[in-house]
Structures are given as structure tokens and as C-alpha cells.
Image 1 (tube, rainbow, N blue to C red):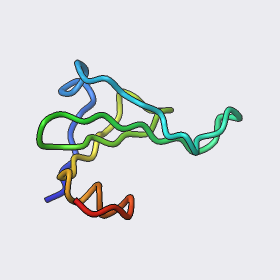
Image 2 (image 1 turned 135 degrees about the vertical axis):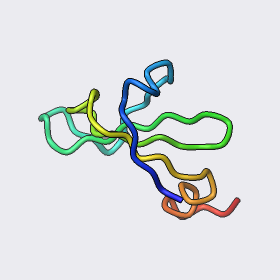
Image 3 (image 1 turned 120 degrees about the vertical axis):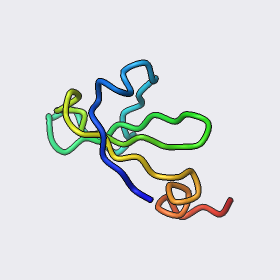
Image 4 (image 1 turned 135 degrees about the horizontal axis):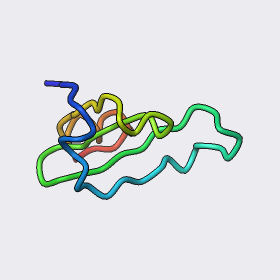
Amino acid sequence: MNTAESSAVVSDLVWFKSSYSGTEGGQCVEVAADPGVVHVRDSKAVAGPVIRVSRAAWAGFLGRRR
């Protein structure tokens, strides 16, 4: 299940910016993982909503098998 939550709830996570994100301030995605969930947010709106997906769903999105 995918859910949205506030960034304040997941502020203790270590976030990584997508390697495909440019430096021109365009569309940027950041991800952070904890044991069971991958968190995804807009790097330009770090206080905004965060989408949580299972690790299996994230691996499928990336095109990897788990």
C-alpha cells in the first residue's frame, strides 16, 4: 500500500537525491529507506508530503527483482 505522510514524521531519515536530478533546480526526487519501507519526497518541498512504498514496490519501480 502507498501512503502519504508529513516529512516531519520521517525527519530522522537519511535522504538521497536521485542521480538523475539536475543542478538547474528542476524536478528532483529524494528517497530514504528504513527496514520495511522506502520514503519518497520532492527535494524542493522537504516539509511537504512523503510517499511510502514497500521495498518490493520500489524494486519493481526501479526494474529490479528482489
